[in-house]
Length: 112
Ligand SMILES: [Zn+2]
Image 1 (cartoon, rainbow, N blue to C red):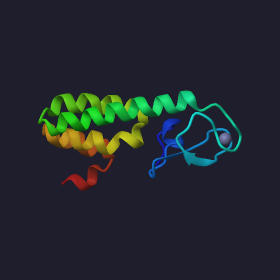
Image 2: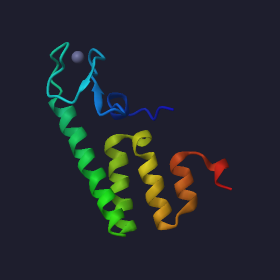
Image 3: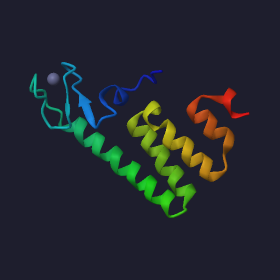
């Protein structure tokens, strides 16, 4: 599933990224190893998203589910809907929002 956002296109689950210009897979860096494209803004955007994600997890560990949910929403905006869906769903579960949790994952039939 694609959510149409650019962020999920450039992220990689192994902690790497894909250059938006030439599609080279590499570790996060300010410059593409292949085409030398400037990736500094993309890297800053990724760093901002990761900071919000960590803050969300910190809030969950402290038992502050509502605050965690707000950070999860911010993360989903920064990282893209697909990337943020699981974190958003988990935060909704901690808040007792069962239907919203399922909706975050778009798997409503599995919630019964
Ligand atoms: Zn490149």
